[in-house]
Length: 109
Length: 115
Image 1 (cartoon, chains in turn red, purple):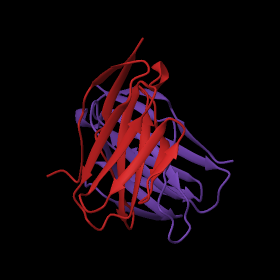
Image 2 (spheres, rainbow over the protein chains, first blue to last red; image 1 turned 180 degrees about the vertical axis):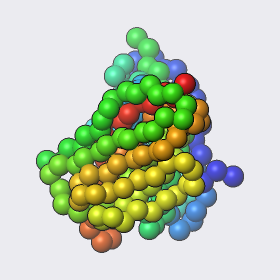
Image 3 (cartoon, helix red, strand yellow; image 1 turned 180 degrees about the horizontal axis):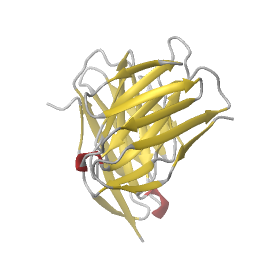
């Protein structure tokens, strides 16, 4: 089993749609969680950290379920500019940060 | 504010040739530094990390090496490139503060093609 697993997609959605991504992790002792966004042929950029209480940043909402060991990202009112690959990232302590392979999102006009 | 630079942006090298990729960080002191490789359509693989000058930890044994000659400079090297070394090489930094949750920030990357 991979340490961090994501549905690779692609997710094809129309503008204005709501889309959700899930990510599961295997290490129950994982400490911190993040979502990164990566545009084609570019570096990953931090989208948001994920807190146990859940957190929201504009159209983006992140949730953490420690009992079930999964993280989710919800994007509301999708924009064309949201098209990218979304990476689930888990920090397990020390210097070990595990990146998921990413979920590709295409938002269509 | 902090910025991270990498060069070159792209590189095409023959098999067996040497490699040197450079990464520098500005606007912070004593950062943790990382080298990752991302193969096409794959996740990021941690290659090396460093907590200070001259301190290098290797995550994956291979024909690559890393050095940190200055606090904010991180270099990735190889004496002889293999075809399998092709990929997107990313340098990242994080705050060196104890207990930090290890948010990492990436440079623009170097795209390496070995022929």
